[in-house]
Amino acid sequence: MLPDRELDARVTAAAPVRDADLPDLPEGFLRTLRAEGGDRTEPASVLAARQLVADAHEARTAPRARRRRPSRGVLARVGAGVLGVAAAGTAVVLVRASGHDAPPGAGPAPTSQAPATAAPTDPPGGLQLVATQRFSFPFSLDPAPKGLTPSLALFGGPTPSGFDPPGWRADYRSARNPGFTFTVTATDPRIPEPGVSEAPMGTVTDTGTTSVRGVPAAFDSGTHNPPSCRYAPSTPIQTREPGQVCSSTFAELYWQRVDGRWVHVWGDGDTYGALAALKKVAASIVDRPQPVPLQVGLSPAGWSVSSYEDGSALTLISDTEPSISNRISVSLQERWRRITKPADVLQGMTDGNPVEQVTVKGLPAELVSVPDHFTGSGNRGRETPRRMWDLAAQIPGGPVFLLQAPDSLSREDVLAMGEQLIYTP
Image 1 (cartoon, rainbow, N blue to C red):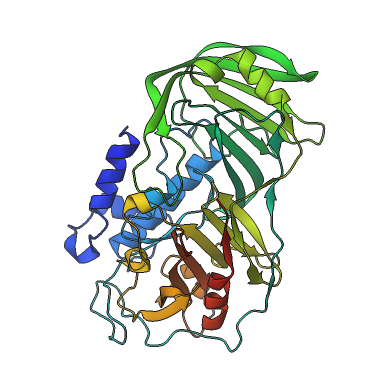
Image 2: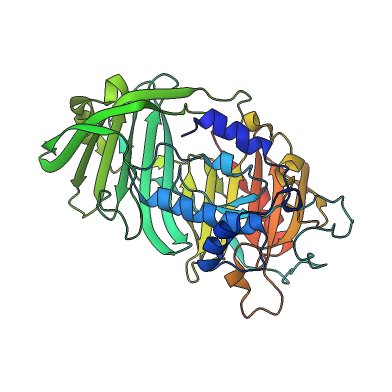
């Protein structure tokens, strides 16, 4: 496996590559992808995007296969737009094929794909927007661990293969301490979904049973060889790449709450890679909400947050028509990845469509309407193929963000949502 830094470097270097610049993929690989539902006329980048989503979903549903996943920001640089969040491997990731950038007012540039339509679908008034109540992560630790930074996530919702029930993850670590993580889910995390492979997280050296606040719990512990490494906590506005924090030992606890939900706690390193320390963490989990940094001040009536990730990304879906083709996604862009202005976000994502220069939160922003290549099923029965809005803007004094929404929202709806985006680090 490549370490995170080397993987980031390779993916970033590949970001400007276009379909026309790439050699043909092996026919055997293409036949495999197309046999699983791909369109024979789709370019290689769209086929590869489908495979990325399948891989991301597999990693998300296998609790132990969590150590080597690429981060959300890494996927965002694969010459494509990312829709979704979730959560350190727990969000739905949608990748759209890249095309050519064009200046405002320019016609579609030639690409290896079908030409973009001349005008976006802009319904009069769009959906009804309403004020959104602030949402929170429902669990806390009492007492809170000293010196560790929490990263909070909600996962679940529409996936390429169906609909997953909601789950929550809290990841506590620092630049020098790999810390611990706990998840709360509706099902036993040790039982993989049908057809989902489970990669081992290390070598188990001890296993048995214990208790958490008098409730029976299973545990195991072991070693990582080579050491398991992840990025240290970071913020979207820091300019230096975060360092990595590694561990060679781990411990895990599993038990079922009285409400039927399952809790999985795992710890790494010298401090939390031991069962005694992990039992103290498990006993400190309480049902007490804590705030989430990224919020949407406006959303369509009847839509709810289905997933969010580490305070830097969230996804909204319709309560009555939840589907992977009917979602709104917001993601903050890390400055250390050299994303410092709106134009950096849309590079390679416009499919040759004209970019409109707009103003959001008093700062220059960019808006473009593009074909929704990935969710081809969302175009069935539609006289006009489905399109998506991509709004790249910036929070004053804060990070650049990307808001992506379906064509059921009007241009004014998208701009209004961008104006009301809230980030409180």
